Image (cartoon, rainbow, N blue to C red; front, side):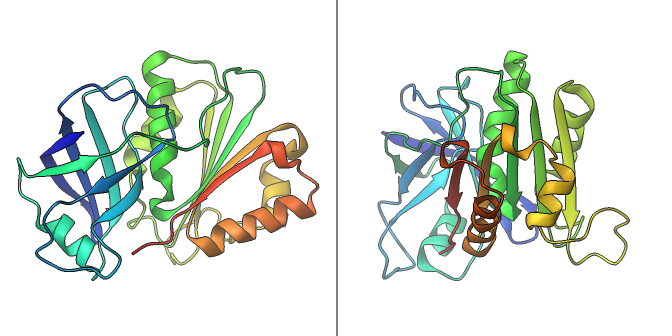
Length: 234
């Protein structure tokens, strides 16, 4: 279907959020992805004019979607950045299995690196809007506090959602007084002592995702309790 750009925000240096109004309602689940095709590419890209993004907005708003991405020098990203309000893109049907379970009984642990936060934003916004009773922990790693996407919104959720816990990691911030270790097996066991009883969702750069997967495998976490997606960048 056609999506018309209605808002573009630079949420942090190097990270852009785009909101599209859809020509008809889009049914999707919190945590799912869509592909976006830009019909005309003023900046050519050898990988084509189509890319995949996690939806950052809540599925309760069926006529709009938000995506957020890091800016790069690729032709696609340059074209995306150059879109003007009312410019149109093509939005395909949503897909992906990294979604909230139907039951709220099993605790959830979200692990995100950088812009890998977007699928969890969709989930948490949905949980907040529906006042759902999920027991959820977000372990969120970035280099610096100032460079953490959506930090203020997440801290607000930490204050108002009774069963949500936000754990921040800043790996390269001299002024940060909190956790600064990279997310590894030791940190997971310390912060998530019931790790064998929870369902893990994780998203971020390939190195972070593969490292977390290896750590959870070493901890004997069941495959059925792991869902993940890589944000490779382009």
